Image 1 (spheres, chains in turn green, orange):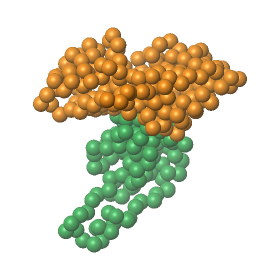
Image 2: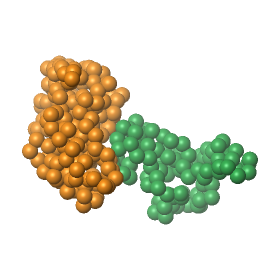
Image 3: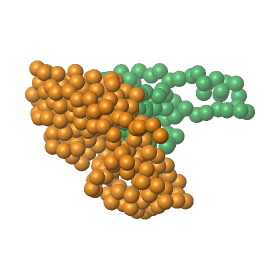
Image 4: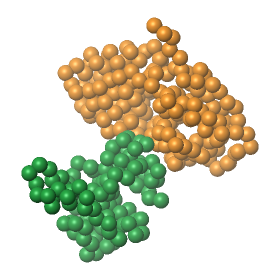
Length: 109
Length: 189
């Protein structure tokens, strides 16, 4: 069971109050992009054992989407942050580095 | 025009806590920029209450204003006053981007009261209902059994639960089950 913080409500609640929305920070490749880029955008997903970034929705609360950084192996949550960003903020990266030195996830580290 | 009725016609149940449908309650959903001066003034004009902070509820007279999300408020009032609140908000906020809708008949409202009320709700919701954590100035939106619900305290040992009207019967039944005689938990009471 995950315990997540909603950055919009300030609520700390358990997983059943939220709904997972898949991988975070997907970059959309639309019309005019190469077939490889479009295929990657549609189908290619990270499936790491360790640090992972996901989108979640506070479906039974304020209804807002947000981002969560967590460890898929230990279920440890490193932090949650606004949905209005295209990459993890520095304080989230620092929190992960403090516990998982040398982590990498897609182009982020 | 047809006569408006509440979802369960005031159904009630007495167990370790009293569960009662609160009947018709006026409710207005207001969305917009909650920090704007126009919004603060509009809410003050319509209800005489202040715009609540995060997860807070403010009250004035028969009106209560609850924080639902960073851009949404729920105003509760007498059922026949809801249209007047919408009109007042629309007048005050003319020109700004906002949404004010009378949702009174889209919701069902229940009161759970009695010394065991905290325990009854704690059985159903993943929320800390201890006296230290849940006071009269808080609104909490969460899950009640399998449906979304909002809950706040309307008096000592009395909790008001709001859900969508379509799940009113389910919510009432599951509250009654949690409040059945002999099911005291005795932790939060």
